[in-house]
Image 1 (cartoon, helix red, strand yellow):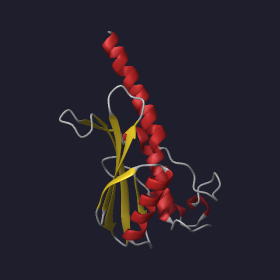
Image 2: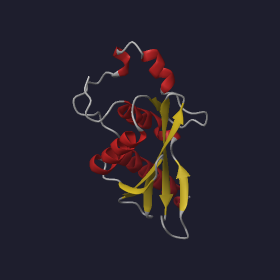
Image 3: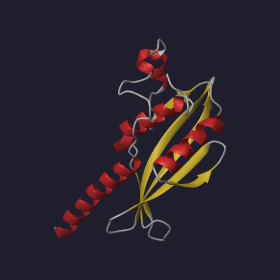
Length: 166
């Protein structure tokens, strides 16, 4: 029974640390209100930010190049959140962040995918938690669903260029 209790405590601790490590804050110069709610195109943006069929949070970005979007993600995740860029391609980014103060070595990984869709780009994000990363005992778990609200909030920040203010 104590091993089950320890395991549950470990999951709760790891989940809260993962959430804290990947949590987003509002960009500087914005208010608590949604930027898209005040625009006449709010109906278009509500469908543009719908999750994919598998429940992965995503947004449809129009009027920005894929390089600019990926550069904004890299800047935010590396400079503001302290994550390390593990891999980068023309349409995919992967970041890692070791989770401190856990009984077993644990790492958070975030994966962003940018795909052309109609007249825009569909940006989606997923979050994974790996125990014993980089070893033969490595095990991973997709925790995207438990963080979908925070991910959706973060994805909204990439609709506009990093320096743009309304």
